[in-house]
Image (cartoon, rainbow, N blue to C red; front, side, top):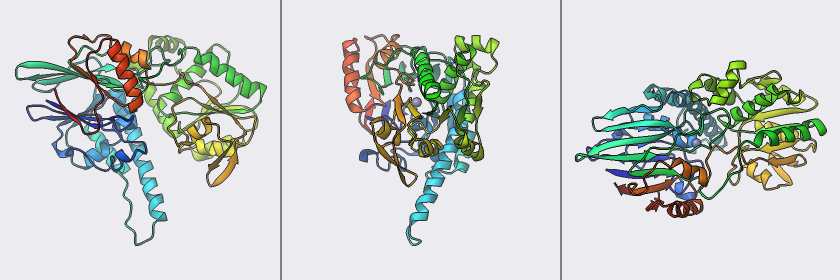
Length: 465
Ligand SMILES: [Zn+2]
């Protein structure tokens, strides 16, 4: 059979891998949107490097848009097969793909308004209707259960501990009387994070397609973050009487922060100030989290015995509509505001930046990866002035950063995730979903650890296994 690396090759986004079996069947693993500015990936989102009509099935590791974001287009362009994922991933995709479609429709509309009437109109990649239609092909499966996809091809999901519903994929394919085992790690989460279960190490395989986002890094220890967060709240909101604004991804990061705040509230350590989650997508995602206690870790189940909602507490307000969101700006005195998007490129966070960046009492706490060129990166790089909503604003507010919130394992944590691999039997590891410099460092670390053959495929490379 062949593996074709159709995306996330020497870059972090656009995950997409094609398995072409000798029997003729074609299986896609992930179908993500490319989200960067590299010219090698120009038109990546618009054009396919395979024929969607020829794909028999799609296996989806998790709901993040860089893994799922082109599914409505795949369906629109002729893919008729089932989309297999965990039950939680299916539910998250329902809101995330609709949100992604809405953003694309709005962006196309804005672009068309700028264009001359005689110029050709821009079309969105897909519409909210396309996203709804694609959902009809989703099939939710449980973790740790083998599923027979075709007669000689089965797979199962293991918890990847990355976001709600995230999974790695182990496949068994019989060809010419021999069983070949192939693994796809998806995105590998960090151990000992709040709320969700830790990842389950991927079972031993013959070939492994492995992520490498932080292949060159060692993160901070994870459980110091609650203490650090509390000391920031005390400094900014109590001592300084300012507002603490936390830009956070709607899915994953927001729920983790709320969970930590809820724990502080249960211990009676949280100052009595208003806390807002100002993102409709985060509110919808939080509801989906609460529908999937099977993904929670033991600590969260223990908390559920005494607190039926670990993602809500007195003083926490979820603001859904625009009026409620605007009302936050009229609030005088200290408050904590968690809002999307995490990189501050879009969404309600931009209104909070516009209104609060010039007041030295306030602070912005950056808790996630911000890509070069985004407002989040510009601020964390120490800009003194920024342009926002057509105006220039002075950056007088403090810009703070916490790095322990990453949803991706570091080098050591990823090598731990591979601990069930039989190094003499594993024929090859293909590194994907990482910048090339980081992948090279990770490849060296893996070789040093005893993995014999580690390669870094390029975009559209086809490998026979
Ligand atoms: Zn992810």
